[in-house]
Image 1 (spheres, one colour):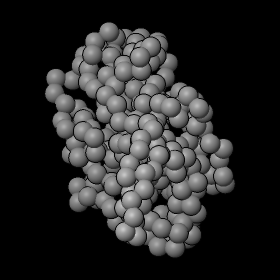
Image 2: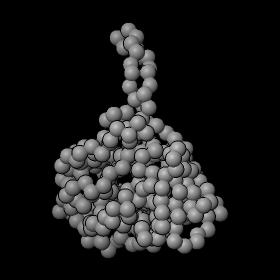
Image 3: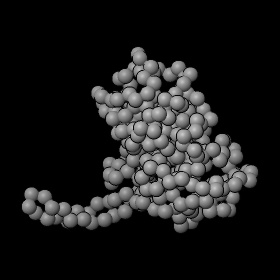
Image 4: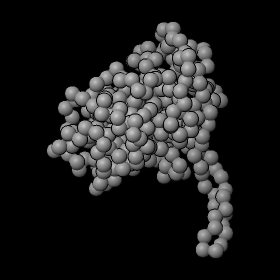
Length: 268
């Protein structure tokens, strides 16, 4: 399934910057004009109080803010959000909730690239258990999902240097998000699910990013019993996947992948 590109001209201007570099090839120099991925500091303000600063690609910022708060357990439903808006200069996202909330007293720096942070105890069991989920998919589905993921890498094809994650029901891609930070893509997916009222079951997450403990925790929060990555998991993410009942798949390509936990879901 090929999805239409969501990158409108204004979005492209925010997500990439024109640059020139010098390239050496076959003993010759040449100048190349191209675009590079934008990395920007964007602050998150909750109920008028600045909480933290994302280092991110400045697209889908409302979804990033809402999804981050969902993944941190600050909110559960979209109707708790009274308002969410990006400021005029694009360097702050304002979120107003319908209830008072205290900022976490400490933020832990995670292994996510570009300096991800969380206040969640990554060693604790999340408020979900996916072990009883009876989702089953044929092994050949993994390769098809990876091909679908590659088809929605719109920004990556323009600039490179960016991660893509997607949510699937096993048949098609429901939502996708791109960002310089792999953890940001899952926050954006969570935010888009809430903002677009996507309630599909089953939920399968596919990502280009390495699976760290934080990425595994976000997948659990999204109730995704299958998490697929183009690259490797960490040792802690494998342990967490076993505890949470998530089927964790790494180094996934069209005809090959590794299963690190709960492989019973691929028994067909």
